[in-house]
Image (tube, rainbow, N blue to C red; front, side, top):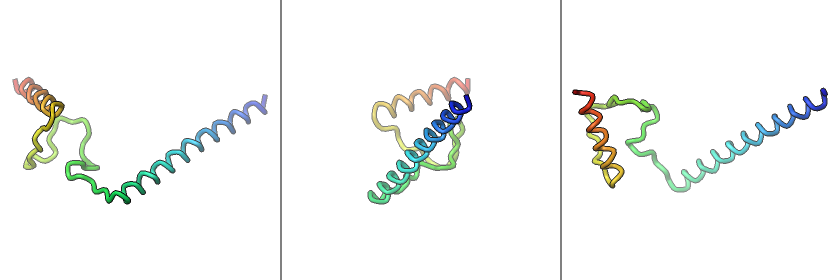
Length: 87
């Protein structure tokens, strides 16, 4: 019985090590690809921006116009949601 528990424990450790190694290699590969392509983070992508909120982070900043069908649809949806909230 103790042997089975040890084997399951070792299997779990090996499984976790595989996931860690996969994540480490993927992050390293992506970082190298970003350096190779001279990636720069866009201005609209902020690492500390609040996620999933309806509040505007910076009121003075003008939002870029919605482009494409999806952007226009989302813009209409937000406008309607704002109108419902205000009454």
